[in-house]
Length: 311
Image 1: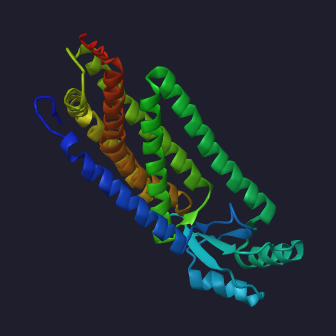
Image 2: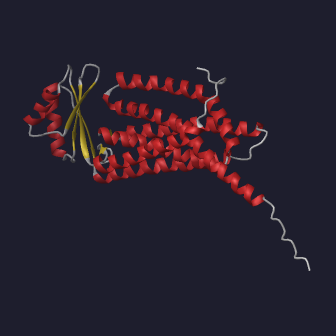
Image 3: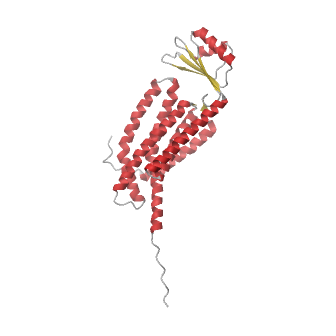
């Protein structure tokens, strides 16, 4: 794809971009307040049991084995090339005696000892807190780097775009009630890295075009620079996101159940990241920069001395 010889006016649609992002944010808040997040046992107390069989398993078969020893899992998910793996989750901690009972039963039934992982409420809260801290630290580091590398307005616009992307993923997962676990946090941090990289490329092009511009006095001059910069980076952004999306789609379709939510979060985040870096971050910077220039122009305007009255 080559858009270098085309003239596309992205700036004139900036209010539409802001409106779309604003409406989505409002809808996302409503969805989160209504449905909440489907937190996995990584962030809540619970137990996960990995049952492995020598042949294909079914959910009904595994459930029947649990019921035979007096257990009823909250959910059973199949995985593996031939569904030879089954993951059973419980929303409570299993005691040592219960774990021993389950292990002995499935060892006798399938000849393989199941793996059991248990997360206490304290550990779950700590993991959730650490995940939030990791995202905040990454955001602070990004805004410091962008501010030093460019200027503060670039950094603030980039952070707004990053939070937009992260919130987009969270809202979609809340709407679809997909389990939020540690791979989900990894996907969010991956998208943060991808999005800031795409945003930096766009900002770098804007800065270079600012240097070569004959004059930059107001909004119209900045709008020409932003439009030119977006056109110059449009092909690169589209080609990059399509390449990564093909890889993420392959993981989602052919990967195991354990990383499917990770791949889905990547797919959602890639779309949001490309949109925000081109149509949100750059437009925000344009609006703020034009106001900054306007203030500087107003302050630099000389004050006319008052004429002394004639005697």
